[in-house]
Image (tube, rainbow, N blue to C red; front, side, top):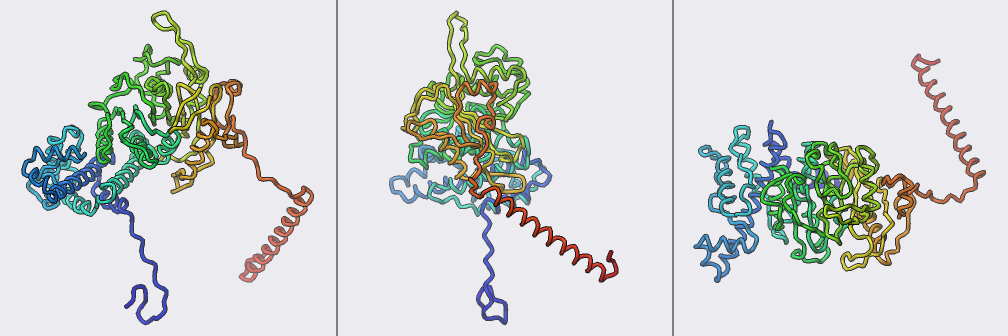
Length: 547
């Protein structure tokens, strides 16, 4: 019987086929059953660790099959040391026999040792064979809180992931990995924002800065999303990945491991330091000068230990208050910014207007520049840094409802080159973009910026700063303001103060004609309303309830 017809019918319309759920949502729904009573922050590493293990095992097996088919490489398979070096040369992690996915899958129902113990040992063995992964992988699958039967079931389910697309599985893997990170960020609430930045916000930062070549730095890198998007930008725009180098730091131990795995599965070589460490109190990249800095620091962090850093050399524009790290992050970023570098930073909107604890003075000096007396008696002029401010719409972050903005900073606004395009002299100007009206709700509580939204903001910035960019102010959206105008506003940087209101569409209908038409419409609606009231009264009277 043809699909879609009921028995006994000839021409019934076929039922629409049920849409196939994306692989990431299918895996999430299944894996979430394993969590039970485990805290999301703990379970995150259990689930992502399994995905990582599956991916590196698949990559290894693909490399082994290639060697088996190559007469010149077949002999290497009998020498584990040589074959391991061959794998590492191709950015493939070496996976020992008992750590491979097929072995674990065949023992998914094992009770002695449990499947959890086998996975833990697999992670230990992989770390022993791959120096870059030592101390990184999750090794707590044998814990009592983890149902071993369900763990075996999830392991079998994850076997359905096929890492065999044109980018060696990275497209599928990246999609699944990013989806899981986003879902865990939602589950963890505020804490989730410490390791995950909304994808559309990262993409906007990258599209505006265009990190095409040079050093890219993130001092609070979380799970590494800024780096992933930067490399993706280079690939999509025909650049060469070997022309950018990645540096980052993360203070949370588990998040640092997460970032290491996130970058490893994409074969992104990154220097995240030899360990996790607090950026303010243990800078692992002293002396680094980066062409691009992209960062989403913790918003309004009051527990950053600022009272211990009052005399720190990074505070050229003013000592940041101990109760809020916003301007400490900005100045740390400037400290690591190359003379021709650019930075894009996500901050809470309070950074644009706060006057508490000297923040207004720091903001003013970052806008105007400042002359500082050095210890040797000389004086150094530090230039104004603020290039562009973007106000973002609300509800972009699943982890916080705090309104946020983007700061774009540069040491030299007088000229420069970006992707081979010459930049004009913007000294004495700041571009303000009010993007609060952009974005589309994708759920009851979450909004996203579309690619068109991102292009609108990024193209406005590029047109303003490039020679011959043909930039024009757009009322209600964009305004190139002079420093005199900013000074007149008390050095507050809220875009709404500068862009004005959106121009309304021109209305050619004469006032007398319009008021006559609207009056007639209102009269007709009132007449219709009275007729409806009468019908309701008559209906109620018919059942004995009239008045």
